[in-house]
Image (cartoon, rainbow, N blue to C red):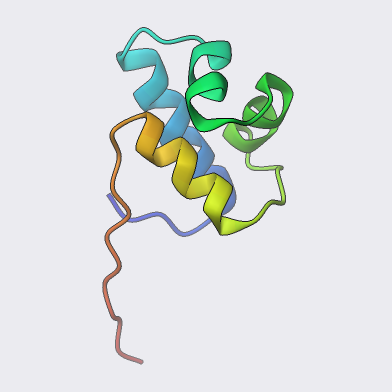
Length: 71
């Protein structure tokens, strides 16, 4: 899946969390962020260091795959 916005990335995270049957609190604890922050992130509103985003992706077993685009 290609992600172009923070809202799309947050939605991807929310969908994965729900498919795994995890609560925001469970993911937040694994990623060492607050539940409130995770809620904002899932809604595309959190502004944070990339390291925190990667922690959340890792907690959910997601991998960021970077593809070069031309143009």
